[in-house]
Length: 230
Image 1 (cartoon, one colour):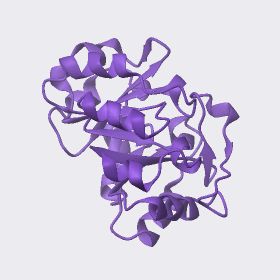
Image 2 (cartoon, one colour):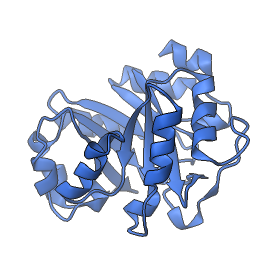
Image 3 (spheres, one colour):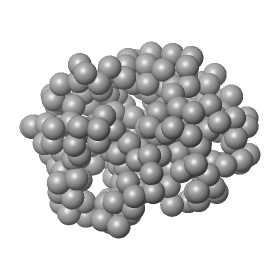
Image 4 (cartoon, one colour):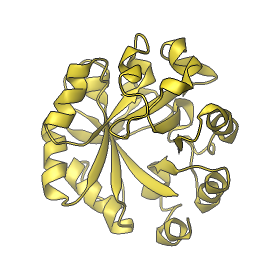
C-alpha cells in the first residue's frame, strides 16, 4: 500500500487542514518544518520517509481566487525525483493541460469542481489522471452522474471524506468499502481521518491501494516504522 503525504496550499503557504472548513485554515506549525514554506514542509515530510509521491491541493485555484503555480514549481525543482498529484480545481481540459503541459504533476479531478461527468469521461480508464470522489458528511460533492457511472472513472480513484480531514476521527472504512465494491478493479485510495499505524493497517486489509495522510505525520502519530510496516 502506498502512503501519500498531503500539503494544502493557500496564499503561497502550507496551511493546516481541518474538517474541510477551508475558510479557517491557517499556516501550518509543525515540528517537521521551521516554516510554513512549501519547500520546507515537503522536505520535512520526506525526512520522515522517502515517499514516492506528494499530493498537493491548491486551495486558491479550487476556490477560484488565484493559484499556487510558483510554489508548485519550487517544490518540483527543489525536491528532485518527486511525483506530485495536484488538485487545482480543474473543471475543463484547459485546466488539466496547464498542469500536464507545465510538467508540474499528475492532475487530480475533484468531483466537487465538476458540473457534470464530461471531463471525467474523457479520461475513462486513464492512468494519466486521478479522480477524487469528494464527500461532506454523507453527501456526495459533485454531479450525481459521476458517482452513478463508475465505468467512466480513470484507473486511480480517491475516496475523500472532507469532514474527517485533520479530525482524528479515523478513516471512513464503510464508504471506502462501498466505493471499492463498484470500482471494477480500479486502484482506490482513502483520504481523511488516518490517526495512526493501526488505521493504515486497517486500510491495507480493506484493499486500499494507498492512503493520503497529513496531520498524523506532523503530530508524530505515524512514523517511519508504521510506514515501513504497510
